[in-house]
Image (cartoon, rainbow, N blue to C red; front, top):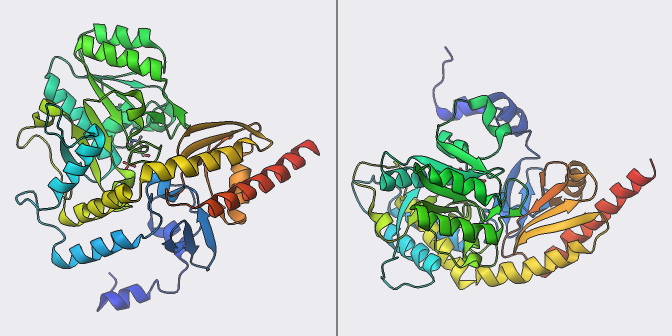
Length: 418
Ligand SMILES: Cc1ncc(COP(=O)(O)O)c(C=O)c1O
């Protein structure tokens, strides 16, 4: 056994090793190879260990909406960490109910304490917010209705329940058997939804407003209205997964608000706390009172530090007019990209955009833009996902468009001349 006297001595053994080689040696291989090692971030830019500045049009996958390391959040975290980091749920803290109040108000568009006034359960991630939603739906409907209807192509997370709700076999097969009782239907297949509901054993329907991980496919509004009517007719709960779309990214506080429907349960995470791990499950009115003491919990969920990060983030998003920023800058980005040769279609809303290419060159394009200092997210062979910070400015957007445009022309030229 290795003898060591202090942590400093122990860490000295790896001091001179490259970070990427340490990653390769000590971390599990569930992610692809990292693109680089980043050491800091500021606004829309990341800085690598070698000092490169990268314009980040992914923002931690729709997490860092206020840009990297926003002062207001860093200060809130720092201040709170000197006061109290963690207690346990045997104690309340003063911050969590204020965060829940803001979330409830943004969801309902009012702070009135009417029948729909909601309640929130705090966890630590999107997957956990989905797990809580599924358990809550089962709690509400009881043992005779335990099934959940979800969409093919949807993504709801990697824990077993959330993975079972996910409609992507490639992510599921290695982990079968999944949790039973999940029925997947195609977007627009209202017949399949009604057939499932007629069985009488479905507790909930769950959907993302825009299928994000699948390639930014907005769910059909007509279909959703039909599903919502069927939910009311058959007494099925209507759950919306706003983990990726929430908090202004698509130009409304929550993307489902375009449908004019108030969901029964909503799942949230990602941009809620600028990168501090926070998940939240909101439920309206009586549904928010369905969990009984002991039904569900989380050691870290709703901790003072997590809540300070969320309170600072959500307050800053409100004060900076997150929805307005996403709408204005999203239009600039969309307009600039839609004129480029080689772009087939732009999907999405606000600053959550999917750029579908005419040729299967998304991977090469992503590599090439990265070499030019722009990070975009590649989904499959044809699609780029763009989710810059909502605080991105016009100059940064024009710079990104010009890099994508140059790289796209170079790649297309090389295809046509082969
Ligand atoms: C719509 C949606 N739901 C759930 C999740 C899972 O979130 P997390 O990775 O925080 O568990 C994601 C993550 O990408 C997501 O996009």
